[in-house]
Amino acid sequence: MADIYGRKIFVIIVCIVQGLCFIVLLLIPSPIVFYGTIFIFGTSIPLKNMMAYTHLMEFLPGKVTEYSGYLFFTEGMILVVSPLVLMFVTVNTDIFLWFGVIQNIIAIAMFILMYVPESTIFLLEKERFDIAKSDISYLLKFNRASEAVSAELEGYLNRYILKTQSLTERRLKE
Image (cartoon, rainbow, N blue to C red; front, side):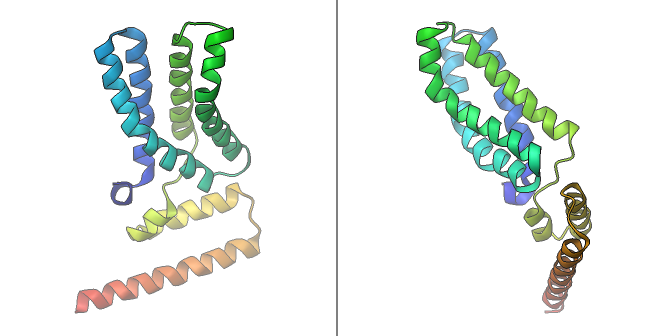
């Protein structure tokens, strides 16, 4: 599905769904709700881990990639640390639910407040060349790439676009 619609929309949807599940667990302490939300988490966590963190780390330099790495690390670490917290700090499991709510709010805020481009591969495959070009030039400026690197990458991109357009024209003629 991400190959059809892009990664970015799925990342945002998964963060919203997971945040809502955490809130529901906080507000409605019921075994039926628990099992329902666990099912939703089970289906959404692979999407989040395979798309969200990878998507952020693919495109964003420096501190943003570092923060994305911290989020990924802390989300994975919670499984290791939670028994220790329950043994030595508190037996109130709501603390973990609040952590999940906060983490998903941070992730959604990152996507809303910062410009996070769509996957370049997705854009090129869908032949959205103008958006891909503008996203790539944004990333080059954001990363403070040299003029030589920018020119080289632009050359590769233009050759790819011309090749793709000529192949598309040939298919249409056939």
